[in-house]
Length: 210
Ligand code: GRF
Image (cartoon, rainbow, N blue to C red; front, side):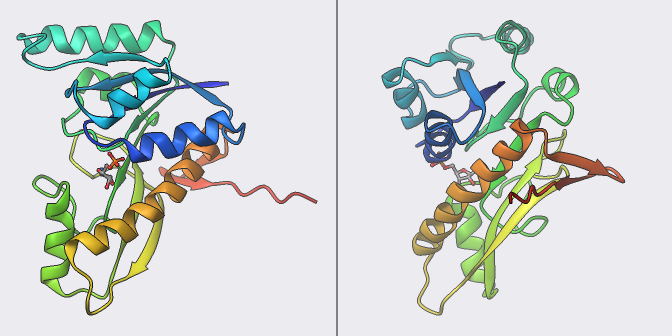
C-alpha cells in the first residue's frame, strides 16, 4: 500500500478523483496528508470532511522559508510518503523535497507539454493562451517533477479537440474531465509498480488480464 501526499491550492477536483479511486479499491494507496499554502481552498475542506490530516505551509504561518522547507520534509518523512501528487499546487516545491523524492513526484498540467507550460502558464492563463493561439488540439499531461516548472519526464498525455466556439472556460472544463481520468490512471500505475524507466523515460507497463 503506497502512501500519497497531495499538494493542492485550489478546488482539489484532481485530488478528489484520485481519492475516489482509492476509496473504491481501484488504487492500492492511502492519503496520509494533504498539504496546501491556502487554508481556505476546496482541497483542504475536502480533506477535513474526510478526516485526512492537513498541513498549511505559507509565509503567515512560517515566515522563514528555511523552516518551511524543514517542516515539509519532516512531515513527509514522518508520514512515510512514497508518492507526492501535485494537484493544482501553486508553489514551486523546495529543492530539498525534489531531491529527496526523485522520481516520486507527479504533477498534472492542463496542456500538452512542452507546449503552454513553464513559469506564467498556470490556471486559466494556460487555456486563454491556447485559445488565442488558435491551435486545434489541447489536452492534459502527467509528468514527473524536477526543479523547473512543468519540465520533468512525461508519463501520460491525452488530447482534446478544440472546437471553433470553444472559450478558455469551455476548454478548461473539457481538459479537466480528461485530467480526472489520466491522473488516477498514472497514480494507479505508480502504486502498482507499473511505471518502468527506459533510457531515463518513464513508461507505463500495461497488464493484460485473461
Ligand atoms: C488543473 O487544471 C491542473 O491541471 C492544474 O491546476 C488545476 C487544478 O484543478 N495544475 P483542481 O484543483 O484539481 O480542480
